[in-house]
Amino acid sequence: MIIQHCIANPLTIIRTPRRLSHPGTVLMRTGDSVEPAQIVAQAIIPPDFRIVEVARELDVPLRSANSYLKVERGQAISEGDILASKGGFGSRVCQAPISGKVAGVGRGRLLLQAQPQIVHLNALVPGYIVDAELGEGVVIETVGGLIQALWGNGHEAHGVLRMVVREARHPIRPTHINASSQGSILIGGSTVDGETIQDAKDMRVRGMIVGSVPAGLIPQLREAGFPVIATEGIGTTPMTQTVFDLLRSLDGREASISGDIGNRWHPTRPYIVIPMPMQVGQVIRADTPLAIGDRVRILRGAYRGRSGTIHEMLARRVQLETGAHLPGASVNIGEGEPVRVPYANLERLF
Image (cartoon, rainbow, N blue to C red):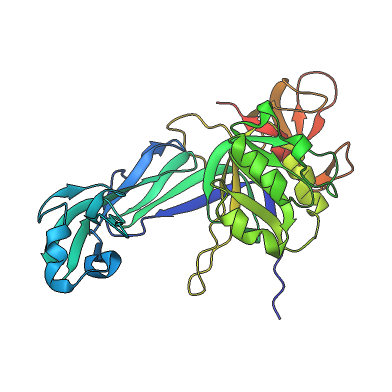
């Protein structure tokens, strides 16, 4: 039996594939820089067809069904439009199930042709295009933190992380949802319930990250309209303390989250990408995201706002005030001895 775990890396090179669901057009080239909302590819989904059984829906003979029609061949229609109606006693109407046009009429039926759909694919994560495949999609390279979770509800978004609980064992409650939640990706410790999901939907929360979700809540989560990611999967398991501490250290940073789990033939893992600032046009080698001598700024902690140079890449992990241990570096800020700072609290200066 293979046991999966949530994987977290506070600083690494991340390559995010962005693929179209149907063959289409890639709008970017290798080497281009992209932002999360930028459209990188698009596709036109071929029109769908629907057969409407007019005679059956109106309960009239096939030979007389055409006399009740309110539309004709080639006419444009919108979803909900009345296609046919029968008045008098036991009156009935037949409505259009889709938007498009009437493609055919005959034998008591209507053939409807849906409008072609244009699907736009955004970058989701900031970075640089390192691979552009004709008609398929792109691969985007980003420097930052990466967390691979075990379950997601299929949605994706980009927003600002906001920690709303104090400990990994605490769930997200309705009391955590308020006006400041709008547009944020909320982070909880253990789980979430249906009332909280509905409140978050009403408040237009951008996304949610928790430890686990109960199996009975999955149908509601799939219809939530925003991404919900469970780092530990289905059940009642709280978020791993290391992952919780990492997310807490990144509170207030922008992040991209994807709840895509693929399918049984091509499973994927939901992920959270927390990009670190990069200068446009600057390429960072994948094997050395940070190195001795690099200029950095400290983002949080006791030395927040200070800048300096990396003095040493520490072999031992740095202990946070919470007790968590994360990989880090020794930074010379020009005031006495170098200070020890986790990678997640550093951004490169150019």
